[in-house]
Image (cartoon, rainbow, N blue to C red; front, side):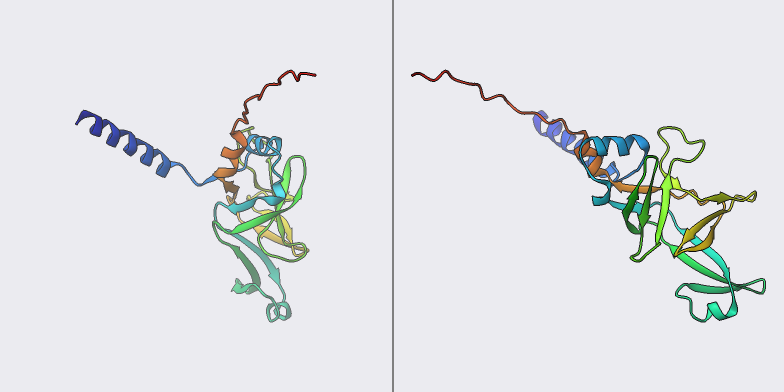
Length: 184
C-alpha cells in the first residue's frame, strides 16, 4: 500500500513539474550561444513575440485611402497603424553578432530587429531595437522602408520553443565498441 502512495506521489510531482515548465524561452545572448554551439541554425527556428506591438506613422489623406494597415484619425492627422499581436510567429531573416532580424510577414523590408540593448545584462532577453529613441521614450524603426514609431515601454522581446534549448543542453554520449586483434 505504501508503494502505491509513493508511486502516486512521484507521478504527481512529475506531472506538476512538466505542466509548470514553459513551452517557450526568451532568446538571450546565453541561450543564443548554447543553441549556436549545438549547431542549430537560427534561420531554422520559429520565433514568437512576447507582447503586442503597434507601429504607427503619420500619413497624408491620399495615402490613407491606399494603405493596407489600419488608419485612424487622431488630432486631425491620419495615422497608419500596423499591429503585431502577442505570440505571432516569425522567422529569422538576418543574423548579426548581437542582434537578429525577425520577419512576422512575408515581403521585402518587413522585419523587426531584436538584440541586446545598450544597458542590457548578459541574461536579459533580446528586445526590439529602434535606430532612434526620443525623449518621451518612443522609438523610431523602419518597416517596409518607411519610418514608424513604436510606443514608449514596448520593450517587446522574442521567444523560441523551449525544446530547442533542452536539445542544445543534451550531452551526447556513446559507448566505445572496442577493437579486437585480428589473427593472420
